Amino acid sequence: MPFDYTLDFHTVDFRQHPELYRVGRGEQGVLLVQPYKGEILPHWRFKDAAAATESSEAIYALFEAYLKAHDFVGADMARKFIQMGFTRARRYANHRGGKKYAGPVPADKKGQSGAHGRPELPRTNHPDEDKVAAAAIFKRKWDQAKTHPEYLRQKEAFIKKYGK
Image 1 (cartoon, rainbow, N blue to C red):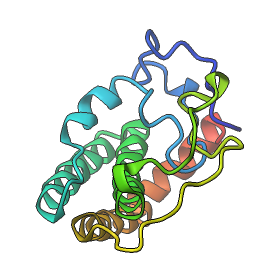
Image 2: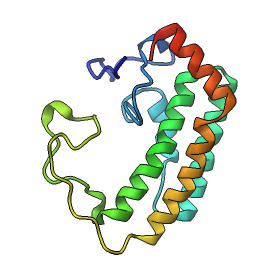
Image 3: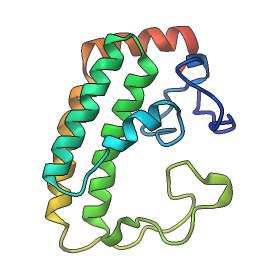
Image 4: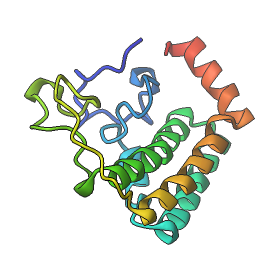
């Protein structure tokens, strides 16, 4: 099932209503799903290798804590933030200022990822080495999270119970 962007994300507590959560694709919903956004976002940094190391370790610790508490939605959100650390660091490495697409996001696509018909801006000839290093750190943690045996077990159980 696709991620449901029609929900009232300002009022839904996904810890109380996990049935409303959708795993979706990639990072869908990462900046919307509460209370997890509020718990994880303060730890999310990717400015350089030091920030990425501290951030990825803190978020991975939350990931493990959510798994231990059998809170798959929290674990999946932590995995998404780790993934987003990788993708955003790479974007800022490749595109000065981090802007990947030309023009504003269409009003009906806000909160969703993708080009939405906008052309990609040119990549820099000299990637930002701090961001390249930060991306590599997040990539290792992302690979660790998405292949974690307990995460995979809880993900399968969640999908069986609620759908993707």
